[in-house]
Amino acid sequence: MEINSARVPQDGLRLRLVGSGETPDPELFLSEEELDKAASFRTEKRRREWTGGRYAAKSLISEALAPGASLRDIAIDYDHMGRPVWRDRGRTRLLSITHSGPFCAAACAGPSAVFLGIDIERIEPRAEAWYKDYFTRGELDREPGTLRQDALATRLWTQKEALLKALGLGLKADPLDIDLSGENPVFLRMAAARYAELGKPRFRLRTLECGPDHSLSLAWQILEGNDGF
Image (cartoon, rainbow, N blue to C red; front, top):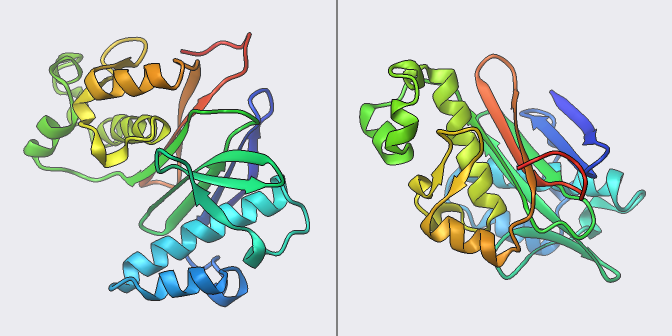
């Protein structure tokens, strides 16, 4: 399964989703330095996820931002917050990469965007302790019992992870620093501080279903004048 440059035209967002078996031989798209990086991973699973994410990002860049560029020559860097970016001749585009099970996905934001995050997770039952680690009391109490539905819980989880990536926090922040119990997302503590640091950009939050058992959420900055949070 592959989404070729699915795009939200008014925001400049582009997304590529790649399924297992679609990633070519790493020597065809990774640089020598990246091949060394891939070889350093101790498990085949981690190596496959990393190379799949790189392929999704590089093929997206080649199509959307650098037509005709060799995938091996496309370099993915990181900004000061640890978020992946692509830089070329004075241009910088924010990227986000995610993977779960058979899927790897990458997205690139519009010009000058400072807020972008995506996350994909498998829909499956989870232990009760997991809910307490990831969801606020307001989220758990919003509709008693409904959050325990696997699809809804996974959707909210991917939304939180996408927002934390967009903030450049990832695993450094507590998932409880984001509350999705109301109509609009609420940032708390570390998440609130980082959102203010980024200038409180207006954004969209959307979830897509990837096959019958995966959810993919995207959080991205919108242009002035369009509806969003």
